[in-house]
Length: 353
Image 1 (cartoon, helix red, strand yellow):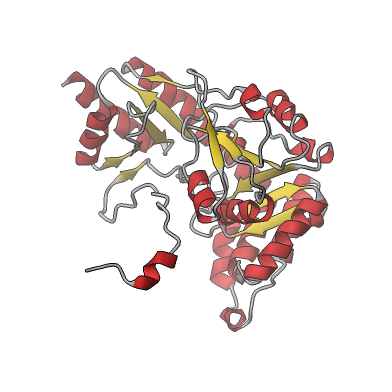
Image 2 (cartoon, rainbow, N blue to C red):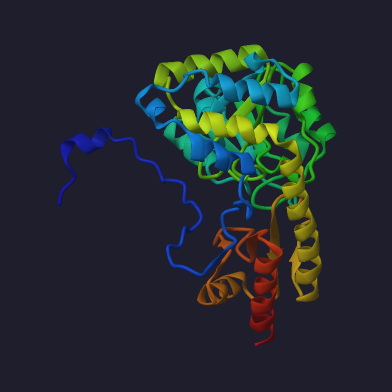
């Protein structure tokens, strides 16, 4: 069929490809960096006792209960917090708000693969800055004219953590641009650059409830920064859709933030399993980055694609990209100890075949 005339006005982009969400049962799912443990126990109590009559009302557009809980946890003013439907929504809104010059925005060549999608959607020019051979950032690449900067810390999919000093060097060198640090994995052993928001009014720090707080299914993300940055983001948000986050999510999110004890216990379990997993993988002949996230980025002398497919046959799902520089790596989410031991058993079979 010939293209219809109206199609010439369609905005065409290559969409982001998320990790596979298999529907079959009895699988071990280590491909989307979800937390293997449930949310804080008090979330179940909230869900069991929620007054469903509230569902007929619009949610609070300011997400006040959640914003206040986050502000208290991080010792900020509520006016320094922006919340959205997952960190993807927050970053998308930040792109729309701050990346509006004719200069290219900068982000690494190996990084979260949604950044170039948003840039294409919003018609933002961009340039990829190649990571070094060890997958670290060269800060000099970001000391050039640009329309903004974004990168994750720790990076995804490599898991490599950059120092706060290096990040501050980049921020300080770019007073005319907004610098966004995507800290989706910071709770798994990294040091946040959040304190720098009091020093630099062009820094936006973005985090999520999907990883360390076990709430990927509820979609909560937030940004922290200078009050002026947050106001600009809210102005754009309320011009697009005022009621983005539903009531029950706001309430559960606030409760999750308050349970610091459970949060700490869960994160520490994942960190301990990660370090144990690094040793087991090394024993099986894998090389890997020193990941400071809830996943491991590893390669073997056997081709990654082959291992990936063999694991799928055994109902174990990890992540693989057929992309330059990383096409012999797999990203393995940290699961429970039982899940990881099942993975190691399967890998032992595969590498010794």
